[in-house]
Amino acid sequence: MALSPKLGLRQTTALVMTPKLQQAIRLLQLSNLELATYVEEELAQNPLLEREDGLGEDDGAESDSLDNADDAPDSAELAQSDRLPDAGEAPLDTESAEMWDDGGRSGSETGGDGEAFANWGPSGDFDDGEPSLERTLTREATLRDHLIEQMTLTIVDAGDRLIATNLIDLIDEAGYLADDLAEVSERFGVERARVERVLGVLQTFDPSGVAARSLAECLALQLKERNRFDPAMAALLDNLELLARRDLGALKRLCGVDDEDLREMISEIRALDPKPGLRYGGQPATPVVPDVLVRLDRKLGWQIDLNPETLPRVLINRTYHSSIARTLKTKAERDYLSERLQAANWLTRALHQRATTILKVATEIIRRQQGFFARGVSGLKPLTLRDIADAVAVHESTVSRVTSNKYMATPRGIFELKYFFTSSLPGSAGVDAHSAEAVRFRIKELIEAEGVADVLSDDRIVEILAREGIEIARRTVAKYREALRIPSSAQRRREKSVRLDDARTPRVASRAKIGRV
Image (cartoon, one colour):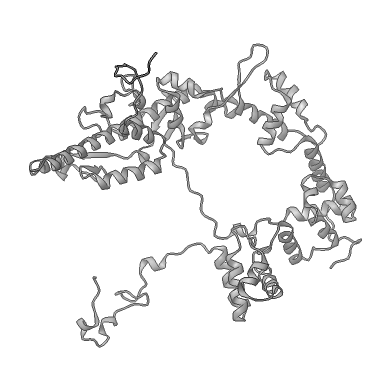
C-alpha cells in the first residue's frame, strides 16, 4: 500500500472550551474576596458596567438588572430563601453555548515672611493646632518595637546598639533567634564574644525567654528568671525528647531525682511559655465571611439563603450605551462598544448562574446532612461529590469548584462546604454505612472519657466500635488517632498517671537534695 498525502472529511464530536466558558468555570471556584476583586477589575475596564450601590430611583439611569434581557432575578434577589432556584434554571455547566458566545501655598504667595506657616499645627497641616485624624491612629506594638524600646534604655554603646538592632531583626515572631552568631560577628567584623555579650543582654528583656536559640534555652531563661534553674532541671531540658515520650524512668535516672521531684519539675515546665514572642504584635484573625446562611424555621424547616454581602450586584447602564452608540462614526468604535456590551451581558449572566449553582448545591447538602444539624458530628452521613452532582444535574468537577473556598454559616458554626463530604465506613450486621468524620469524632469521645485505670488500646476501641455497628480495622483506628494528634495508649497511661500523682501530692517549694546554681 503506497503512502501518499490526501484530503478527507471526518466528523467527530468534542467538547470545546471557549474562553468565555473557561472564565465562567473559573468564577465558580473563586472565593467571595477573589470574586469581589475580579468584579472590580471588570468595572474598571468596562464603561457600560456600574455597581448597584447607592443607585436610587431619582438617578435617571435606566440600568438593567442582572440578566438585562429576560428580567430574571439578580444575585441579591436569589439571596432570599423564598426564591430558591427551580428545575428550569440550569446550573452553570449545563447552560447552552449561546450564553457564553498641588493644593498648598508657597512662601512667595504670602509675602515670604513665614506667615504661610503661622497656622500650622504640630502635625504640619493647616489646622487649629490639633493633629490630623490619621496621625492619631494607633496600632498594637510588635515584638520588635517592644525590644527596641528596651534596647534604647539598656544599651548605651553605639556599636553594641548596632549589633543589638541586627539581632532583634533576626528574631522571629515566636521570639527565637533565627541566625548563627558567627555570621553576625563576621558581618560586623567583631569578636563572637562581643555578639554573645549583647545577646545575653537581649535575653534579659521582656518577654522572658526571648532571643533564645532553642526550646531548651528558651525554657532555661524563664526558669533562671524564676530562680528555679538547677542541675536537675538542666538535665531535664537537655532531654526534652524523653519528656515528650513520657519516659519518666529514664528522666529520673538522668536527673537524679525521685518521683516527687520529677512531678514538680514537669509541672514547672508546663507553666512556661514555649513561644514568648507570640503575645506581641500578633496579626488579628481574619473572620470567615460565609457564602450561605442556614437557619431553622419552626414552621418551614431549614431555610437556606445566599449571603447578600458576598453577592456583587453589577448593572448595565443602557442609557449610557444608547447615548454613546448615537455618536459613534467608525466601525472600530462600533465593534468596541458591541464587544463591551457582550462582555457586560456575559458577566451578569455568569454571576447569576454562579449564585444559582451555589444555592442548589448548598440546598442539596442540607437535605442530605440534616442529621448533622440535629445531632452534631455524630449525625454526619457519608457523602460524595457524585451524590450531589447527580442530584442537581451537574458534573462532579462543578460541585468540586462550587464547594472550594465557600463557607456555610449554620446554628452549629461556620463550616466549609467540603466539610460535609466524607468517605464511608461499612456497617456491621446490616447497619448502614458510617461517615469517616463521625467515626473519628466517636474515637475522640471514647478516649476523652477514659480514666487512668481503663486507658483504651486501639484493639479495645475496635471492639467497642464493632458493638456499635462500625466495622473498622485497628490500623484505621491508629490512623484516625494520629490525625487527631492523640498519643498511643501507653503514652496516655503515663501522662494520666503523672497528672493524677501531681494532683494528689502537694508541691514542694524546693528540692532539698539538689543545690541551686
